[in-house]
Length: 477
Image (cartoon, rainbow, N blue to C red; front, side):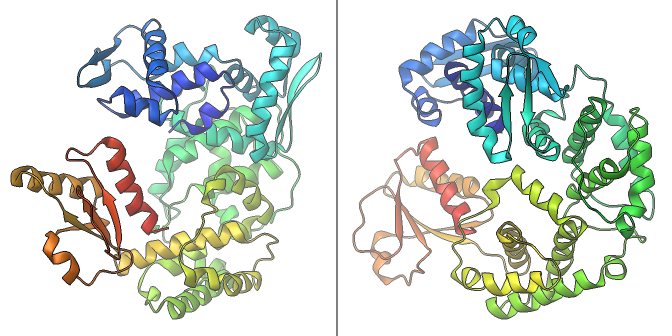
């Protein structure tokens, strides 16, 4: 959850303690061995860190350790922000990134005095931070006078969006600045009752509203880029967006106006239901034609009737985002580089060139790999909507029958809808016609069986259950 946050904590011990807190927040009860494994340290260090954390916990929070495990208890239902108010200000890196959120640059001497660190320590920390920021094509520059970001303003905002989205709903990081999420929600509410209604990721969009407002007020301007100010979709939402930002004292102009629209468009759901005034076929017939070509091609390649799904509509929306601004779309790719997936479907890998050629007939994209991966994700969703794929697990377990029955049900609940678990006895294994992707779950050694065998303990550990869940997840990628 806090992956990006931890990357901007250069202090090794504090980063480990924040990781430990995160694990305790996510799990009601966990043993020290699993904690040590998850944060890649020793059990001795875990207990040492737990003592450090105990001594700093705010009122209403406590850590209990018993023979059954370790748990973080919120006795008085206090907000989680109380934890971060205590621990995050201890990081020079977090304080630096937070200060630069509200300013184009900050005074070096003042920051050093506030944090009680030397310039040598600050430069050592910024070197660590810059390794993480390189993925966003950004660098922190420290001079004797000032500290500032070097890079495009759009990339700076994308960094903050990735960092702050998990904290938007509880207003952490924004509490020092008077931003009113009610203004953005009112903008959405108004749209929902009109012919321009559209389903969106509300927190995702609210975070963009906050970031754009704060950066514009700090006089941190979006770099010049070309855009079509007569684009039909931009025109439809332009005035409503302007009024939403105007309520925050921000008056959108030129690139900032279109950037705010693009951020709003990025928040749109796929499988969307649009208002009657949003007709993408009329506004963007070429994109719709290209999307249909992609669906026809993929349907033929995969021998799946994808035209029965919402894939054509979803691909139209995806292509639309690139059509609005290829430069912005490529900038926004910086936010989620992990979506450059290692694809395992051989058919799709072979068809990548053909898919790129279909796209290039409409959109001239120099590096289409990210877009192709998004097409892959939407294609997989479409396949599952019309032809659900479930990974088959065969459960062969030696133990007390009641426990075996209970455990099989628990495994089914853990693996969820995408997995099918069938009980099988040892003598049936050689008679079963297994598929290559099938998995056998067993607590005793099995030889000469074609599918993969995953061994579990009589009482499976959380680590074993997590690995099983990952097997299910990997099947779809």
